[in-house]
Image (cartoon, rainbow over all chains, first blue to last red; front, side, top):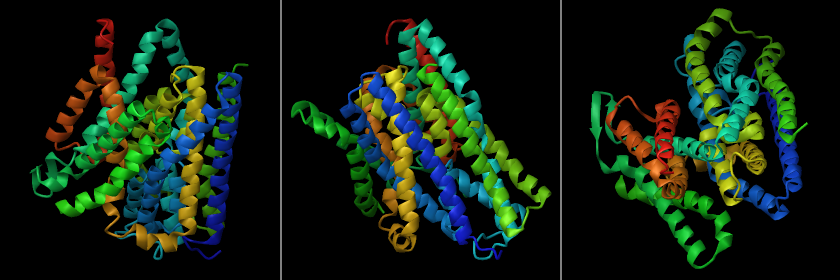
Length: 252
Length: 217
């Protein structure tokens, strides 16, 4: 068969794989929903969870799609579609693809120039280079969650603190990440000190998002606008992303 | 058989299926196009990638499994984007549904949240792929670039204000440590956040344990 990175057969195979992942998601959704009803959780709460999660997902999913767009000129559409719909993040996929290309002596990757062998090599490296969690998670899940249950049985209050701490730890690392372009940074000419306003843009966006969230919290409490609960986080995300455009324009 | 036991059983069956099809994909392409990689070239390329991403992957499994729960783990590690989407989404849902992460109710809400998020992500990407020729010029425009460059600050600003105000005592030390590290250590950049998440978690757990032992949390 004549090779093309956008060959219809690749789209069909990718579509089938993604279809299987959707089937898995629907299966777990239905099982959890039924169990929720058995446990006495109100149907309205379960439906609200679905609605809230869907709303929450829109902005990050569009950003994931942006990652796909950035890979299209290198690898065509079908392969990034698969890799970013399952497992992948562009921060993992791009280095894997470039490393594979480099090992074949390709300095500038473009899907229109790739031979079948080069493309298949890239697919092998991306698939097996980023497969650890896919393989490890089902092997270790029972052991890890079982260990957590033991901690809970021993000291329930500590278990609550432990779960909170894990998320707070993750959050703290991301707050650090947001200021990573500020201060001492490895630049082209060695270590540089960044203090200029342009490096503060992510901090400003974070502050705007926090402010929108705080205003929503006040409105929910003071005016009893409980409906806003479902929209507060998506609103703060999309609002601050939109406002990052004029903020960037003013600063740069 | 309890609900959790059933979820483990179904989870493993699905994992076999999804792992199977995802790992089979390159072999299928090689057969269809009659082109196989040169084994040494493949190993050369795989080695540096595997060293980095297998380490990160194993750390991610240990780190995120407790937060995702049983159903969430079997699903989340297939559909990916855990720290930037699935974990915050599940935690926000459990918070709003007023259930605890370590309860069966929490497990149910977390699974529903991650499954919904996975389905919506896949739909949005599929619609984007179908309309890619129309969307690419719009999405690649310079005007919209800042919005998509700042998804994580937008997400963690909103989440941060909720969690920091609620768990201020636990959060203050790790936040200060992470801010100082990322500002003063040039080696730490956007690519190292994955490594710093477990470091930050360990610091937070040690500090939280210290506060807990003294009855301050």
